[in-house]
Image 1 (tube, helix red, strand yellow):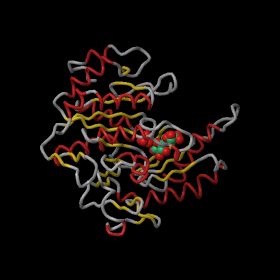
Image 2 (cartoon, protein in one colour):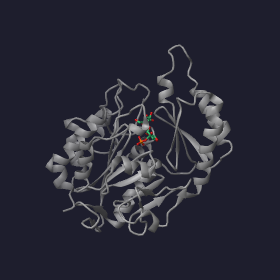
Image 3 (cartoon, protein in one colour):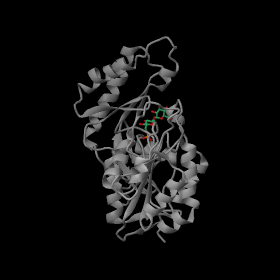
Image 4 (cartoon, protein in one colour):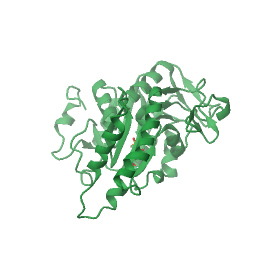
Length: 353
Ligand SMILES: O=P(O)(O)OC[C@H]1O[C@H](O[C@H]2O[C@H](CO)[C@@H](O)[C@H](O)[C@H]2O)[C@H](O)[C@@H](O)[C@@H]1O
């Protein structure tokens, strides 16, 4: 929280050794005061925030209860899921039509009901390696009806080349192929080393620095349009452009401010768009380094509040954050979302109708 606001005292009182205040009762009251009279725009990261961190990235599911909560919240507030996962994968994990999605760290954004309209064949499909990257389960994003934005379209060929180089040059050169995992997130590539580190004998030095070096020299040196970033036991290759989760948050807020937000009852047919100009209060929750861009945007613009999901007893590497408050794990996030839904003062103060 900014020091020059009336709530600046909160910042000064941060405990030594913690990054931001735990979100307890006092902070909940502060949140209520800050968002009163504004429209909450709930924005949540996926891995490590909604879904617990697991060894196998394809097994990071959310519970039915969390899905129900998001669905219910999306009837009152605009809700966005902002993730490093590709747009399609994110939709497949979350399985909700009524929320906004920002995939590949915000490089590809889709509005509510983006996937629920046209069939893949009607929608002018975009082929990537023989599959349509904007289609899911036979349905494609209908860009004429739903919000769709891509910030890095022209980087796609470079990303595809990077995927091939990783597979054909980097991994074979390192002789640890079985433990390393490449995840294609369309507008970013994730090279996971969690399983490799997990199976590394205690007395053996890590070869991760070698992996990073190989990515730089064998992939990125060939492809100036791309750069490398770090995540949780993952190296991420992504477009070298000024765009990140912070820009995605700004984009989503601007969209709602100018077009109104689509908030749904149950289906696209029943969804209503509030087209009145809206002053949104972004409430962003995330756990990863990439979420810091979103925290930082919110802090800089003084538009809302942000929450970092972090347990200082479990992760001692994070030493600072731009977030205002802390929750320790996805279970606490779930409890916080329940509170948002069931505490009348949030819902009544913020509901569209
Ligand atoms: O922005 P996010 O939704 O947090 O996505 C960031 C990356 O999350 C995933 O990787 C992380 O979670 C995995 C599953 O728990 C874990 O195995 C991995 O070690 C973590 O880094 C995802 O697989 C990546 O593609 C995302 O970029």
